[in-house]
Image (tube, rainbow, N blue to C red; front, side, top):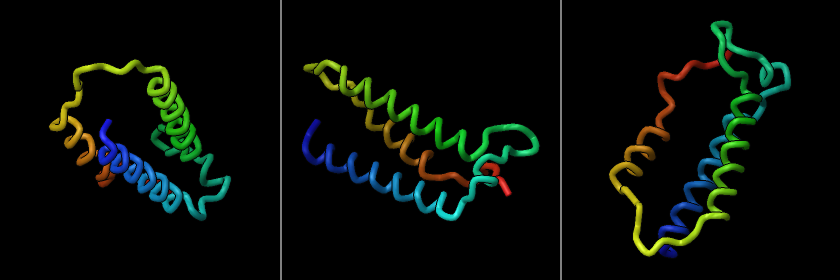
Length: 94
């Protein structure tokens, strides 16, 4: 990974962490544990899922072997970034 790519990735991770922190600021235990009436995960379950998924991905990165050829798909990565940043239309727990 090029140094510039690494810095961009770290910057995006920092922005994501900051956005999550801002979204959760002021959420109390009762609200964090409340599940949507139609079913689904509580805020706490969603955050736990994020933590477990990131822990798993980190373990994959740490155990990965280097490859001589790039497997990067910039079009796919751009689509993921575009969609991941837009959370409109998702249900909000009140």
